Amino acid sequence: MGIASINPATGITLKTFEPLDETAIAQAIDLAQQTFETYRHTTFAQRKAWLQAAADYLMANSAGYGKLLTLEMGKPLKSAIAEVEKCALVCRYYADQAETLLADHPIATDASYSGVRYDPLGIILAVMPWNFPFWQVFRFAAPALMAGNVALLKHASNVPQSAIAIETILRQAGFPEGAFQTLLIQADQVASVVADPRIKAATLTGSEGAGASLAATAGTHLKKTVLELGGSDPFIVMPSADLEAAVTTGVTARLLNNGQSCIAAKRFILHEAIAPQFLDRFVAAFKSLKIGDPLDMGTDIGPLATPAILHELDQQVQACLADGATVLVGGDPSALPIRAIAEFQQGNFYPPTILTRIPPTSAANQEEFFGPVALVYTVADLDEAIALANQTPFGLGASAWTTDAQERDRLLAGLEAGSVFINGLVKSDPRLPFGGIKRSGYGRELSSQGIQEFVNIKTIWVK
Ligand code: NAP
Image 1 (tube, rainbow, N blue to C red):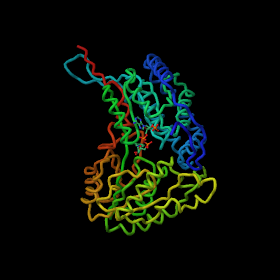
Image 2: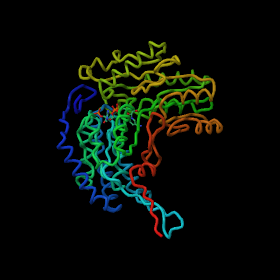
Image 3: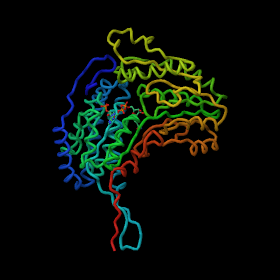
Image 4: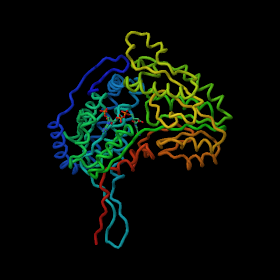
């Protein structure tokens, strides 16, 4: 596939783009480097004003940009608008906090003055996915720009209009030309950009394969990377939990963004004492959701972003069923009523699906299901729940439900994940660090840890 916006609800191509050639890429890197030489000397106050203006602009135009996201990748309009508004939040957070987070930090030694200062690095390359086309980029760009770096964005090939819009928003807000540029390039053009000596570091959010490939190139050139990769988050429910809240949150945690979220709850691990009650309500809730036109504000579930994602998810479900799993709801995209509507016949719709009795040998237990499919397991006790939760190659987030303080503490300590949420949905929040362990990646975004990833933590010592 080239670089193109294709409406996932209808299959209609909205716009296509030619990838930049080598000359255009070189010009963009030249401009970024030139801009960095002056941009690095701008004050926090100046950068803060620009980022606040970007936040204001996002809030004022959230409906229009929300519609753009929906048309490009199919998320329901209400969550698309919420995504744009969340970007304003991260801009405001770093606009307000960056100066404090990057303040010189004195450390007493035998010197008359010693400590740490934080200097920008230069051009940072961001390779980003389509699932949260605005949020993923703003959560990288806001701290990077506040730290005095400049940025190049290689966005996913199916969201080029979002990529262009982000550059426009930041320019409109006052950031100088070259401080943030979108490069419309394909995945096989990334390695040569990473290799350019003026690119100082790179961050990638996406699949394991893409992350490994970028990190390999960056490693060859000894450049730092941050990787935010896939996940198969557990959602553990113990007998003492508030079952109503656990079910309601579990449905959202699995199906948000049409199920295409790295931190979606993907494996539901239920204590056997409450499993039947939980499942009755969970299945009923999945059945009640409205699948339809994502531009309709009443729609809960829109189409998956591309036909390839639909195909892969369908294959995973079929393989799991062939392994001996049971389907409680969904599982058959051809049976969806929306497919009978002519306009949506080419849409990538997949029904909310729940699979259970998955044999331990099934490959499904080790995979990420990037769509509205919940895998359900039943366990006898907390030890079994924690062991099963940790039994994947991933380690992004984990949600667990209990009102027992001892169980809570064992879950907080025992779950192998970059974040553990008790009695709540795993979510990103500008004030808290975000990232994974194991094959979910390394490094952190957001909070103080996020802004310190792409700076020179310079030790200074004065006699
Ligand atoms: P993807 O195929 O890896 O694409 C992500 C980005 O990487 C796109 O811009 C893509 O460009 C680029 N890319 C692909 N192969 C590359 C390569 N060999 N070298 C350099 N760049 C390459 O991932 P996706 O399918 O779009 O996104 C879904 C995955 O992202 C899921 O696994 C999900 O869990 C993960 N994700 C993680 C987080 C997190 O914060 N941890 C957040 C969101 C999503 P093209 O589009 O041109 O191929």
